[in-house]
Image 1: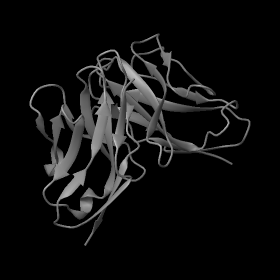
Image 2: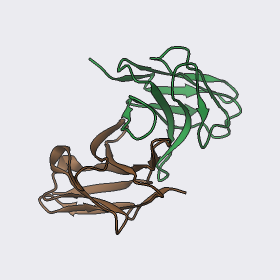
Image 3: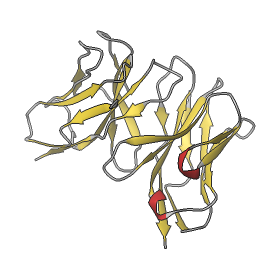
Image 4: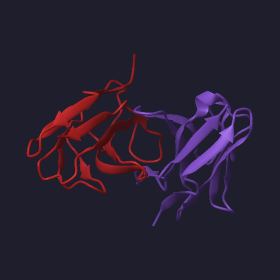
Length: 113
Length: 113
């Protein structure tokens, strides 16, 4: 069953802690993306990767880091430097970068307590 | 510069009446355009896409959209709303093959009995 799996669905973090959100796809897609969603703001791009071992900053990369060591995996680390990390995080992938639709995971809701 | 504007943050309709969700874009090139739907605490699902073929695009669940270059619009319509259509809808543009997806801020569709 092909798709994108994000885990966990809900995540709680104490202030000052780093936390890693998992994103795995078995669609054999080259490109992967991380978005942050806040009410009334749509989706904002955090990082994207066009191909394995490559990634680029998006519009709101400060306080986040990623890696792309395997084609199927694109984990996102929310660091303690991120001032307002409470949000809904969505991972997506596309067969190639640019000019093609993206497929989304079910999201991870991160809450800082 | 490229952007996408969804003209209504909320649209309310009665079940069985037509739906119109408005989207305008700006792009220097021939863009790719998409509509996605998101139910609460879920990922985004692709409804339909325009990629320079037919200007009237049919999607899933009875939705369709018309690309009007002269008006830089890509409005989403459905002849008869169903309760299950209540969700948030995002208009998305990819300005050219070297760009990522740019999201509108979303339109919440409310359907009353």
